[in-house]
Amino acid sequence: GDADMAPYELDDYSMEGWNNLKSYFKRIAWMNPMQQRYWPMSMTVNYLKKVIPMYTLTPDGIEKAVQKMNQKHKYFKRG
Image 1 (cartoon, rainbow, N blue to C red):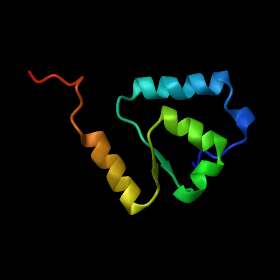
Image 2: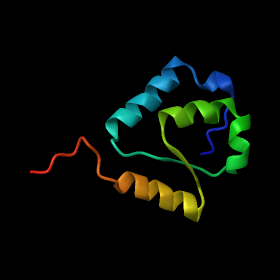
Image 3: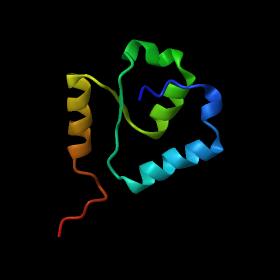
Image 4: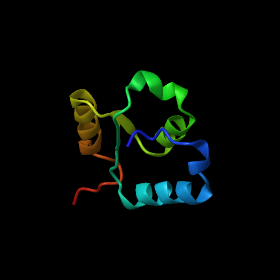
């Protein structure tokens, strides 16, 4: 979804849900179909992209999200 919702939809309960989702999935991305030039005008988009990495739902945005999620992270140990 575009993450552009009414501000009252981002209450403590829903934010706990988004944070739990991010904690459960170590690699996560939000694919936003809204054109990126409109993101600054949405309070909810700006707040949610601080919680979950957000990318445009375009071929370029999908590629960037996949590249980011495929990067090796410090918390992965070789063994």
